[in-house]
Image 1 (cartoon, each protein chain N blue to C red):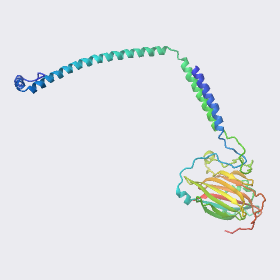
Image 2 (image 1 turned 180 degrees about the horizontal axis):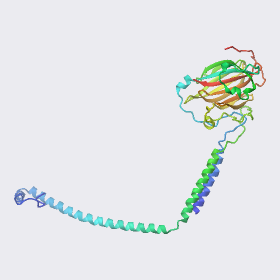
Image 3 (image 1 turned 30 degrees about the vertical axis):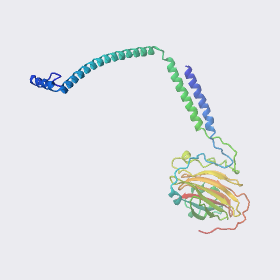
Image 4 (image 1 turned 90 degrees about the vertical axis):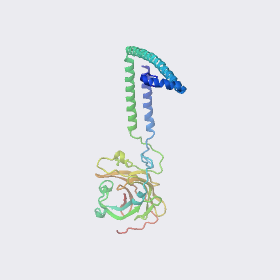
Length: 177
Length: 190
């Protein structure tokens, strides 16, 4: 029985110690740079992924001018969801395809004079990439200094909110082949 | 060899004996056969003695082991059962504790901000784009993941817009009111 008691005590001690250790890995949330919990190590980098994938950028102008949604935008159900549904009109201002090449960030001039820069951080397996986006003002000041996104082909993310002509700009950035 | 073993006829025996009289080498060979036979007989006797001793030893060892096992079975089993039951309970409790600790949600922590980031309380779907492997519902395409964002001197929100077919992370950055130096219209028709 003495051995059993020792075993029980040791396992309870281990069980009480492990939660504290696991809790130390909790990712900080809230104000500040938001970092994904998944920091998986880089996997193989197929060379052809860098050559094939691009970032397709839709520049939309959201207003409340009761013009509806520009049919050239295509199927974008996010526009019917809040906060995009706060605007009743979406017009496609520009559509650009920026090739994702490592160490060669691509610039796209925005209608408000700012510059969107998109770069490839890492090409991963299964048509997955890690890319960066930033927006700079014409005077060189940064508006959105850095955004790092991991996405597969077909996945999109949106950068929105910049004031423009009684409305806002909505940038839909999608990884495409 | 056959002559030595007595397996030849009388005529053959006479021929062999005549040859033995003539050739001393043949006599030596015959003597060697005799020695070899003696050695084999002695070795066989020794081996049979040894095997008999080993068998006795083995039987004695088996008897001793059987008696020890019998004595062991007589000992009470209750302490051993209690030991194993206690160990099982302890392992189960430890496993539950570990599983609960690993499945617990991360604790929100502040600090380490590069820039002020306002998270939208209304956008409770996710403050950060969820990891696709962890939060992807069936039938929906896994969303892109915003791994890091630096709003600089501006304020912004990060949330996910969920539709029937997809979940799209959104970085919402309203202008801070600071006019750009170059504010002319560059709209171009497609």
